[in-house]
Image (cartoon, rainbow, N blue to C red; front, side, top):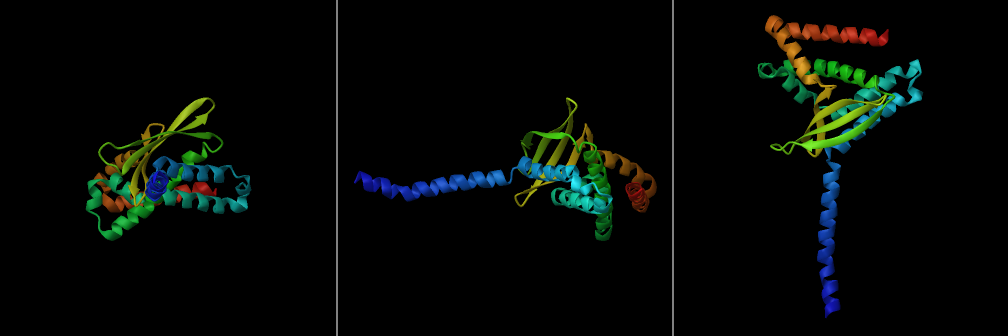
Length: 212
């Protein structure tokens, strides 16, 4: 009888164990630090790959970097946070135009800063979840350079079990906050059309520098 009870209870035990294991795997699969780490490590690997050092592969290298950033960054969320109230006043076409230009600027800024640390190691210090919103988290990283720690911290939002970056703070400077201040001044003086012209001009300058 005891033997039968043990074997009879086995299926339920297995179910419980499978459920616990599945929950652990699921939780691990959506961990913001792990997802962000995959993106950052991919970016660093491309930058450190000597195969991309040849001028003929310059554009391929950049395309791969941009693809990784596109997969992990939520540019619409970043656009909303950067424009604030002004975002609500834009129509659909204006939002699409701004988002496209802004994502180009952000990718150039972020990749440019990361490129300067491409030969260094990245330390993934910790992840901290918001107390009030379970779909918000921050991941703290450090670039280890010549015995110093250079902090690069990421704010992320969860959408469908994926974590996406909506702000990056590099050495204490928030990309979103920095652009929000700059764009706010331009909007007050030149309105939305003036902001678009300035963004387009900045992108043209960035492209010229990159191709020079």
